[in-house]
Length: 163
Image (cartoon, rainbow, N blue to C red):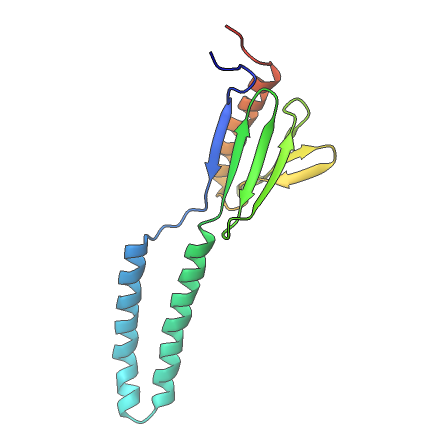
């Protein structure tokens, strides 16, 4: 039988949402470049070739912006809660890992809620240290995360379950 102190009470992997798949991105870029070409061609024929060049720069800038956005989407955060420990980790794009460890009995979940916009910030607070979690999530997702994690922390404070 597994150790009750090692049993995970809560486990989550938080990732930034990207609404466009890589395939949709390439189709969009191709369509955008074709549209830019259709608008730039008359300028090029009239001898205003710098206009066509700047329209090409627009397409390049859009492509680079999307590539940077897709690269940033590779980062994620993890939350692992056992009766003895809450481990929060941020894993960056290059694989660097920052980790915080909290005692579930002493950590406090802090929320900043705006009456019009909803939950703006969720943070773990312990011994004067505050760490924001899920900064890239939307207000509804942050509220759901806070609700679920708060329930799990209450469960962890009750201690390990034997038998």
